[in-house]
Structure formats: structure tokens, C-alpha cells
Length: 351
Ligand code: AMP
Ligand code: MG
Image (tube, rainbow, N blue to C red):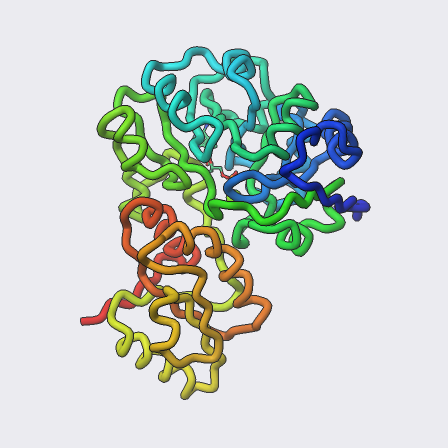
């Protein structure tokens, strides 16, 4: 892949007239010219491209090294844009849109033919769509007048980017521009919900929790592949290894003294051991690198710092990493989904 010059632009997401800023107008022009531009959303940084253009969408797959059978989420900024892209909006989807858009909820619809590059949907008859809740993302979509395909702006398989620096680390020299609008908020990706079934199905847990969805439309199902690693996922992307730090990473389902024994064993082998742990436990364990993104009592703090923490272990060059198991309620469902994937589903359980 040829090296390109990557522009790096900083914007203040809180200014009133964002659309008049040269960084935004230039990024918009790039998107219209089918270049790819990374920008912040409220979940993680996205790698945006004109979703109507094969040329633009190909660049996204190339830059990320993403398998071609893993479809992209299309980002929109208005309800009119949705109606242009999908066959119908079921009643349940209508209520969820009312409740959660703009926000971290991606909905799967039956697509209208010929509206988007077929590469976006990886040949599926359905399309994943969301409206991000971030002024920079919304402004770029509005000003370009395009539906924007935007997967997370990381190299495929690495932890998703929650700062512009993470994007730079992975994609500098491979994309046209990075718009730095500060650190993202939620820190895990959107929830993906399939609304084409009578009972909607969660294909990926994320920023909007199952409890929040059920409060609006009643009971939803959870894709079998999320509970059972052997089942074939309905969301193609869920079959790939993801989010992994470079060193082996294993989750520990047990108490702190059990974890300490495991750490000490590795240390006896001369390894530099890292630990991913809740803040309330960080002083109760001894290891080379103890990183605590947040507390179990407020799991949103863990979500916000999750990917940055996984990336830090790479910078520190830890040889082996143990991770704490977090409660699987609320946003904890998304946190544990990402940690399990980062660990390749390896969990040591205390007997
Ligand atoms: P990312 O772009 O990294 O946020 O990942 C997008 C996720 O949405 C992946 O897990 C995709 O497999 C999933 N996805 C995108 N489009 C569809 C679709 N039409 N049907 C099911 N899952 C989808
Ligand atoms: Mg991703």
C-alpha cells in the first residue's frame, strides 16, 4: 500500500460554528473526493468514507486491513437520510430511534437496492445504520451531504481508538486526515441490534444497554454466538479476534489471592506481568504494571478507559497480562464482551 501524507487537524468540538472551520471544510471536501478521514464519535474514533463509493470504501478496508466480509456501519445525520437508504422502518425501530438517536445504537434494516456501495454491506441484503452523538461527526456528515461508512479507526484486530493519538499510531501514512476532537466519551462501540426480526436481536453489546433497550420495546434476544463461542454469529464481524493487546491476555475468574498466585508464577518465569483491574483493587495486588481504568461500582468509567488501557500494556511491553472479570450488568455486558474477545475467550477459573 502506498504511503500517503496524513493531515492532522485539531478542532474544538464545543464551538458554535464548527462548519465554518477550515479543518472541517477541508475534511468534508476530502470525504466528497472519496478520501478517508478519521473523526471522533461519542463511542470510539471512526474511519469515515463516502458510503456510496466503492473507491472510498475500498480505502477503508485497505487502511484497516479489515476482512472484506465484515460489513461497515453507515453513519447518518438526519432522519431523511435513513428513509433514503432502507426499505422500511419497523415500529420497534421507530421507538428506539426516538429514544436513542443520536447515540450509540446501531440498527440493522433491510436495505434499498442501489443506494450504497455493495462493499459497505459485504453483499448482505441488510444495512447497519446509526446516528452518532458527536458534534464533529454530525457536522462532517451534514456538510458532506453523504452517508458515511465508518468502522473504528484502528488496524483490524487491535484495540479500538479512543483518542486521535491511537488513530495516529495505527493509521498514519495510510489515510488522508485525522480530525482530533479530544478523547471519546463512552469508550466502547455502539450496540448493534437487528430489527428485521419480530423480536429484535442484540448482535453486539455496546453503548446502549440491553436494559435500556428493553425499557423501550420490551424483551429482546441476544445472538447465540455472544453466549456460545461455537455458534455462528449473525453479525459477521463478531467472528474475528479483536481488541487484543500484543502480549497474551487471560481473564481471572476468582479472588485476588488467586490472581496473585497466577501473577507470581509468571514472575518466577522472569516475565513482566501486567494486570487490568478495578480501581478499588489496584492496591491489593502486586505486579509489574497495574492499570486500573475505573471502578466496578461505576462501570462506565471502566468502559471509557478500556481500550486505552489495553494499548498501554503494549507501550509498557508487558510479557503477560491478567484481567479482572467485571459484572455483566448494564454496560458491563459490553465491557466483558470486549475483554473476552481480547483474551481470545481464555478465562482461568478458581476451583
Ligand atoms: P465496527 O465497524 O468495527 O464498529 O464493527 C461493525 C459491526 O457491525 C461488525 O460486528 C459488523 O459485523 C456489524 N454489522 C455491520 N453491518 C451489519 C449487517 N448488515 N448485519 C449484521 N451485522 C452487521
Ligand atoms: Mg471495530
